[in-house]
Amino acid sequence: MASLCSNLHTPLSFLLLPRQQKVPSCFFVNSKGNFNPRKVTTTRMITCKKASSRGPDSDRVVKNKFEKTVAKQGDKKFVHEGLITESLPNGMFRVLLDNKDLILGYLSGKIRKNFVRVLPGDRVRVELSPYDSTKGRIVYRLRNKDPSG
Image (cartoon, rainbow, N blue to C red; front, side, top):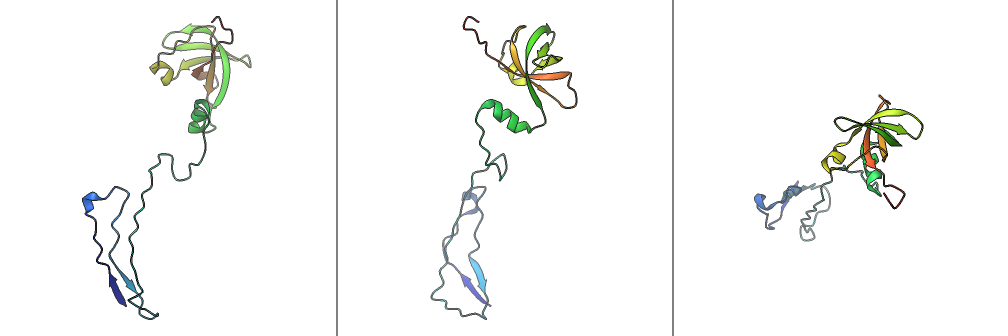
């Protein structure tokens, strides 16, 4: 086996970015083949890729915030719209869904964090778990259709 070494300047290890790796400056060539040392050139190529939190196969395009929350959770939750009929303590509400079911709705963390006011008579979007269809998370307060309110 013949050994080839390049005399290119090697970058210092503390100058490398996290995704860069040192390229070895020596490599071996099998001596059985036709080998001409004058025609061999070595080049270094370092590529950086932006880190993604979603993984390598996340080419899905999300259009708005609602689709983004549904895409984040998958298809595990059922999303319904309803009317708040009664206000209970600790951010709990009685919600009458469009399919005439009466459930207990609680405020999601983002609604609590952003101090969104939810009152009886408001239309809301509720996520229901497939395990317990009597409770739901209120994820969005719908806008009133009439211009006065």
